[in-house]
Length: 32
Image 1: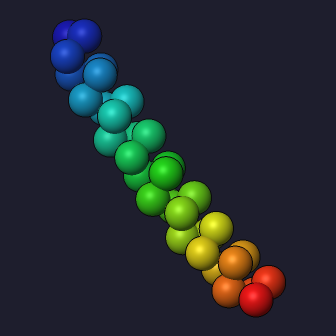
Image 2 (image 1 turned 60 degrees about the vertical axis):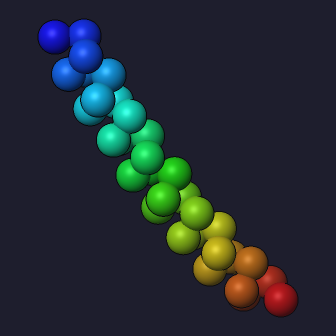
């Protein structure tokens, strides 16, 4: 149970960071 929860949390965090990175890239492109 805990392992499954940890896997879901890891995937969620990874997806969030990926989305955040794309947003950051677009902001940097607009700024430059």
